Image (cartoon, rainbow, N blue to C red; front, side, top):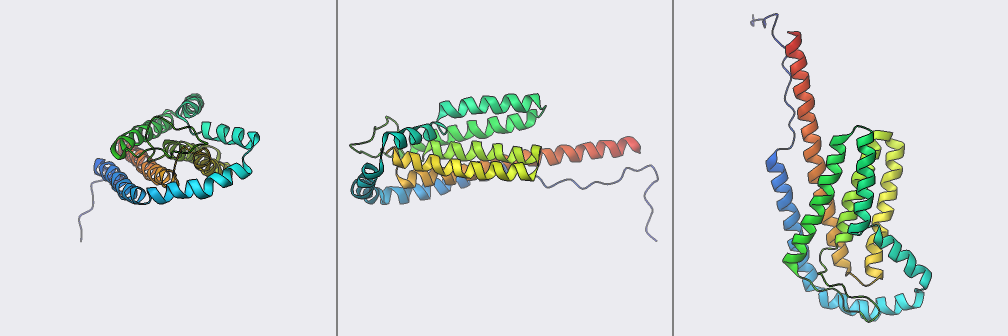
Length: 239
């Protein structure tokens, strides 16, 4: 017969298989690899995109453009700007601290700060010029990937995730739908205003989703490990 465990032994609790530092490193490599591939594609179709903006987008924009629509697009694009997101980030962090969810406040901070940093590095790496359009303002920095698109994906969806956790599935689903609509409008506004090519926006979306996945996985892994340690300590205390 198999030996019985001692009566005073603590129950064995399996350690969770949370993401390690290697997962985060691989996540960064995946982001960089995907952006390099997409950047090469974007560079290859740059001429075609420029022609499309000149021959299709310009007549379309001037056909439907109006002061009201211009103002709406500028307001929408401001919601994905660094200045707009910093204000919204501060509001989110204050609310989370009041709710005593400091770990979630750290999650929002790391997610947005990392997105801004990665986007700046990628812009410096690719050095893709902005679209040159007579009706659009040419910004002084580079074009690929779109920072507005990337940062908005990361910020608005991490907020939607937290709403889901705090307020429940119904509110979380509504927040996720609102985030999706807003992110799509921000990307559209960047093209409408002539600041980006389509592939810039697409690259921003892809990079944002990848970075958000890495950050959320890392934080959820830490939470599982902490919960496992609490269970172990409680089991040891009872033994």
